Length: 251
Image (cartoon, rainbow, N blue to C red):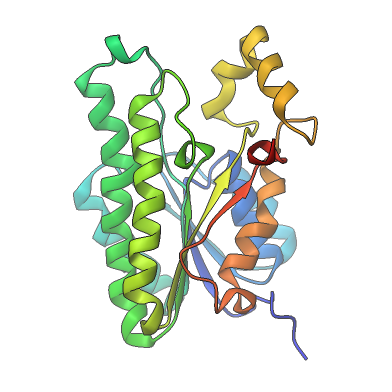
């Protein structure tokens, strides 16, 4: 019998796959057998080199997902390359930090537009292909800020809280149509988004002291959760926001 985690013959679109969590997920999906279509604004050469040893097919699409007009062409190209995508991982996102009293409208709009608005319409474009075929796995990358408030990141917290709700809504609408919609909520990982926190010695020490696992997460730590939610093993899993946080929420 084949493994229920085997993704051989399937194609996955992973946004923001050039570095960090997106790159870790893309590599893990390829290791599980999936072909990978990596989407982002910058080059994907490093991600491609990490996937190459798996022997799985790889295709990069350069696109600014903050631009609404880019979304449909991304999915159309992915469909043409793959013959039919079955997995979409919505990882691309940005963060802006400032006290709420000083937070600007421009920073609010930039974060909400990419992290929530563009994500929804990219997902809509993919689901319009998946639903007629009766199958598909959508994995959103949420955050601990889908559960907690945080500080100095009002638009990011709003976007990730909204994403958790959107994940549940889409699961309710699409579960009976063969499309699973779930999310992963990473804890504190070593990524570009957390660089400012890690450089702040006091804040970094406070964060590390609350993580039961005793360390920041590495991008590879999230791959297993993504493979699970993208695989047949999760066929009856709908609307879950799965923390991968080293035990942060348990403390």
